[in-house]
Length: 239
Image (cartoon, rainbow, N blue to C red):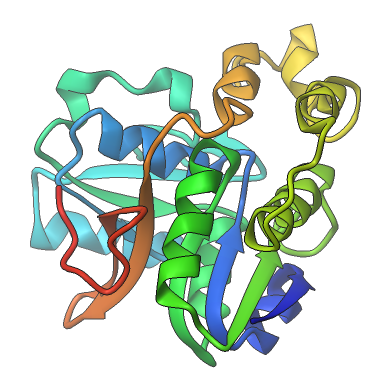
């Protein structure tokens, strides 16, 4: 298969075939943890206005939103996986808006299929793509707010490409740990722990923790991610 790596919002606009929208810190790691902790469904949305409009449709939905890393005022949660309380999200519809990841979904208008990308389910992603066997795979690194490269997303794309090519990166765990002083250094700043807690870093680089893929679908209410077993491409999502 033809595997191309694209970058930022402009890259999302260019993506075609099966697109993997990658946001390691923290959007699509966050969505994996939300599903693992019992969320019923997650709806990625692009705008803050659309996020709050969901309260009119479903008064029991949970709003998860960030801009510039910080929780949006009025949202129930920011984009921090370590902040999730299972009893808060179990069985609930989650409305999710972020500065980078969900913007990539909204802009991937030429993709035939969209799945999300992160380290926590990377092997499941590779397994899903190999079974789907698309002619073209677009790995989209969303970066910082979709406008500047992020080391962790670039590394995730290279890792996914290596898995799809049947090879491993021998020093992948060392390279992940090196993000402590690179793309993930803000998680170790004592003055930013309220926004970027250190635990989020460790949760987001917990490689291959989950064996499912998040496939993005669209219905009359917009985008919705469905949790799909990594070896069940093309089959109905399970919750």
